[in-house]
Length: 162
Image: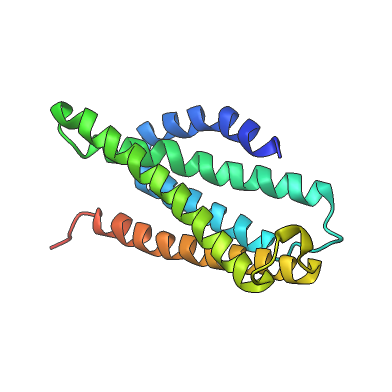
């Protein structure tokens, strides 16, 4: 489980620096796509998935988070006046928290649909694994939708040729 934060802590400063030299929207879009691919891979988890697969995939998702988070913050903060930095930063933090809360709710709701109204410790393991897999499918789908919107924003940033 520690591979994700290690990768994030190591690579986020480089991603932030890179976003100062190239389009942060492109880096954010690539980061979101990498994260979505990692979530797709987790949809295939089963009882025989190795710890190495899980650790490497968590590191891969950490790479995606690194490429997304710092450049996304850079793009957002670069789009507001200096006097609005405090408000923009607080809105960004609120949206991140809301995203974490909503994703937890969605995953829990999907898993609950599969295991039914019983204690999770009493749930059949096949039902639990199905719920977990489908929560990753839904999460990756939402992430890919974000990639599409982000890509549309990148394309819109291009100068119009006339």
